[in-house]
Length: 165
Image 1 (cartoon, one colour):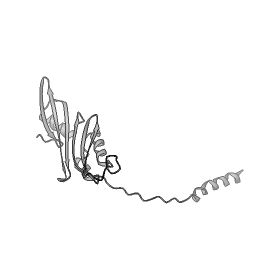
Image 2 (cartoon, helix red, strand yellow):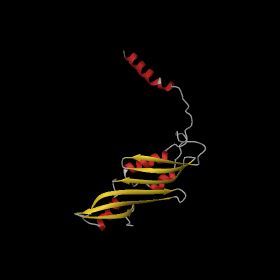
Image 3 (cartoon, helix red, strand yellow):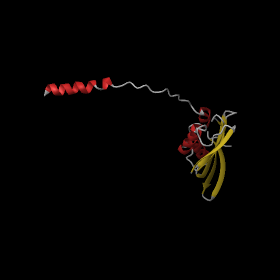
Image 4 (cartoon, one colour):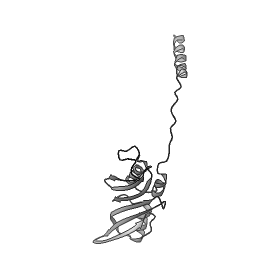
């Protein structure tokens, strides 16, 4: 009985050693639209990040919209919280975007700046706007916020770093 168990153990250990070697084809990983993702940053709310990631990874050349005769393509991306309108070149690179999101989570730096300047005021509504321009290699990001204190309402503009505009 011991010889049978010992034989099965040896057989069980040696079978995986004789497995076939499979060669896989080479896979190339590239950072699609990395300049866009670096410019818009990672401090935004989760829905914003997810939609911006969709814009950056959109495969224009393999989409049904692609045709060799056009130089640029304007494509819109929507979610319930907002939308992004992106302009791509014929290679699939993001040239410009216009982004607008409503009532998303405000970053802590912006919230702290509002609380410091307007103590006792409550955020009633916010709109987050982003514009990206590849030629200038920069983006502008700001919030339009509606604040309420009792029956008083004010509207403010503040950038993503907490500076009032």
